[in-house]
Length: 281
Ligand code: PAF
Image (cartoon, rainbow, N blue to C red; front, side, top):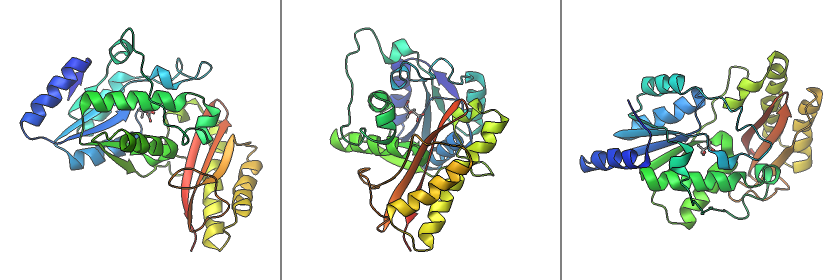
């Protein structure tokens, strides 16, 4: 596996591979790899001749009081794991490479970014959309791989690609969970033992709601009440716990016949998100 640091070098590497007729898969990441990231790399590996993983802790998607400085970074470990996953190129640019002096462009996807994490983290999705647009421009992949855990991010990127006619296929991969249901996240590293235990309530809350839906409950208040009771019992006050349309994230009054149940909550030192697609029987 090659480690490439500059925009110029990654362009040259992809250009050379394309000359050989290679298809290119991109997995955009901020590093601190876990099994969720590895599942994206494996999906890309199975589908493409050249697999590029970008590793860039993107400063523009962190708010002023967020965890940019504390965000876990271990490039050597990440490089080892990416290599074991069969990745061809780890693209690890500097902030100066991604945002050279005079950088003045922001990609804003309206509407979808007003709710959920967009409401709680102003500017976050502008940072995400801008850096992903830049990565798509630099790497020019055939397809890019994202996890369904960041369901809102996935919709924002799909909308950006559609609106701007960016010729990249956006592939979503299922959430990867720990044995006890906690969704894999680089931010799980912030959890101490007690918080780690409490954090399982997020998945248990979603699962309880899914179970209620499977037994015929579809009204939003009832479904959300079921999930909230599980969070209450764990002493977790969610930042949001909502039912949304799968297409445009508008609030849903009922699971009719499908809806996205999404939650965000602070548990100990970590802000965690999780979601589940609910389907009425
Ligand atoms: O999901 C992430 O890790 C980041 O938001 C992404 C897509 C790599 C953009 O920085």
